[in-house]
Length: 163
Image (cartoon, rainbow, N blue to C red; front, side):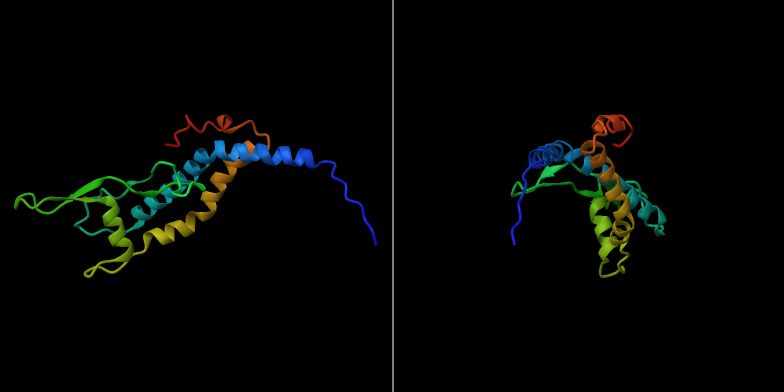
């Protein structure tokens, strides 16, 4: 039994893969930002749907936002953090015991609970509900870049209110 192996066409495939690798490097940040924006919206929707107590300052609602795209420690990829930004104050101003608390700390305490408060897992639920939408937002950017859509500039990404 014998067969022949034809190498015709591999040059074109190699060029396509290399151009996609260049596009992946170039458009990593816009893709991650698109997905992070969708995830931040899901987190903020989860905060809006929660029933807060009369002790709530209201600062947590709408505070979740994407951070900066940063290279991973070992240089093998990039990551972006989506978490509640900003601070809020707690305590009684009359008694002089106001203190500043990070929104990320408050969100962590709500997610996992404290000794005096049961856990209300808002983040896990929001992440699970938004997973398909996050992937779709990132895939839209990638499809436009890798399949000849003209690049990410045609999506009105930078001026379209994504940030």
